[in-house]
Length: 295
Image (cartoon, rainbow, N blue to C red; front, side, top):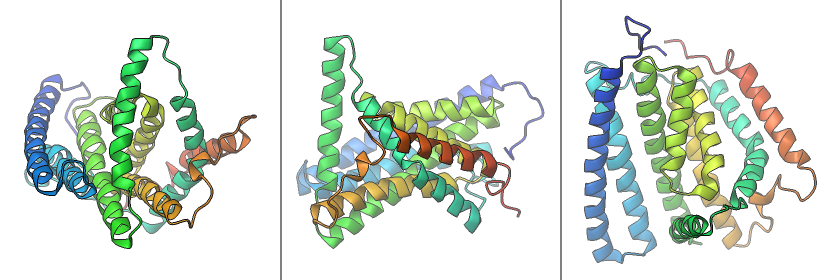
C-alpha cells in the first residue's frame, strides 16, 4: 500500500490511537455541524433546499474531510496526503476504465437496489422503525433534488456530487481503509470494513446492500491504484448522475425511469450481464490499467 511498517503484525495500539483521534475529531465536527445547521436554518428556513445544501457541504467538510486530513498529518507530518492516497494522480486510461466499469455495472446495481428495497423484515416493530428512517432520509433527498433551474442543477452537482463524493471518499477510503492497512490489517478486511461503515453511516437499511457493494468497488479502486482520486471520481459521478437524471425528469427531458434499467419481473438477464462485464473489467484491470501511476 506504499506506507510500510517494520513488522507484519497488526499494530493494535497504533490503530486504536488513530481511531480514537479520528473519532474525537468526528464528534467535534458533528457538534459544529449541528450548530451550523441551527444558524443556517434560522436564517434560510430549516427545511429549505438552500439550508440542506449548505449543511451537507459543512457536514462533509467538518465531519469527514477535516478528520481525514488530521489523520494524514498525525501519521506523516512531512507528507500528510500520503496516508490518504491523495498524493498520487491517475492516468486518463485508468480513470476512463473505472468510469466505464461503473457505468456498465449500473443495471446490476439497480437490480440490487430493487432487491434490497423489497426485503421484508420478520419483526414488525423493527421494520416500522427502519421504514421511518428510510422515509426521513428520502424526504431530505427529495428536497435536495427538488429543482428545475440550471442554477439548482449546478449547485446540486457541486454539493451532492463533488463535495459529498470527495469528503466521503477521503474519509471512508482514504482515512479509514488506509489507516487499517497502514497498521497492518489485511487489505481485503480493511476494504470491506470501510465499506460496511460507509453503508451503515447512511442509516438506510433498505439501501444497505448497494452502498456496501459501491463502497467495496471504491475501496478496491483505491487499493489497486493507491490513489484516492479514482474512487472520488466514481463516487462523485454516481451522486451527480442522480442529480442530473432527476433534473432531466422534472424538466420533462427524460421519460424513462433509469433506476429501473436492469430490473425485471422475469430472469434478470441484463442485470446479470452487467455484473459479469463489470467484474471482468475489474479483474483484468487490477494488474493493468489500475496499477499505481509511476511518479
